[in-house]
Image (cartoon, rainbow, N blue to C red; front, side, top):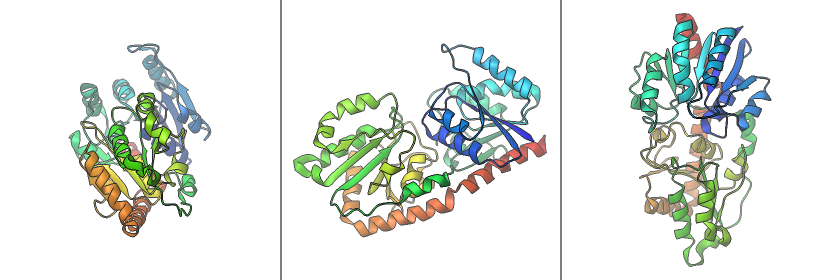
Length: 359
């Protein structure tokens, strides 16, 4: 049996963590899987429920090296055939030991469509040592100047068990619901989303619009406090969705994803969820978004941090319900063609088999 060790900086709520969970869940028999992480999180229990071993070794302080020593000990004793890392910190730690032990290593830490804002030198060092670099967007591969010989693009997959949650109920109300899903941190531009909600809610128009902000992160409490007046009006809600956002997403008529520069998107899980639910998408021009959204066909791409452009496109979708529905259904078909779990697993296995042949 081929042994593969997956490394993560965290197993909390996030796009990379969801994709890692999906990979270890659907990897075929014949692959012995083990997950090691620097931090616990909701997806740790999700992975364990699939019968996969999960080791958590949290840092007590920023420069605590004991977890890294433990990781090296695990690798020396277990001797995986392949290591696949999903975070900048664990990637930097595993590169030297993989080279020393002759273990093929895949760096999968590029989950954005541009160079990382932080840890640039650490990232470059890790990418130089890796046998293969896997990104979830062509934009990410190009931004880091990864040579074709070592770089591979594997688009995100979607768990088929979640598809039942994408079926929309018949909605005969006159309320147009708009949803934005993402980590509530400076990376995502929830401020523009909230600004548009406030603008559309002026003059008593809030009875016709409803905005849902879904996600967790360090800015959540601050965003809720700043939008308390909109919440009191019933115009904006911050539902506590947990790991599964689809029951809320499918209530909407449009999905929005605004990203604050210089941060960039890779293959956005949020956009995939909108497409799965048959929603037209409005997103900012950012990284790999154009690899998912066909501008004017499955939705609209607008300039970053541009509230006027976002508001205009929402008005257009509301005023053209038939065209909006066609956009959503076209996006749904594109989603089915691109993001099956079968393609996701097949692409990852192809990279693993390349490395085993080289070894």
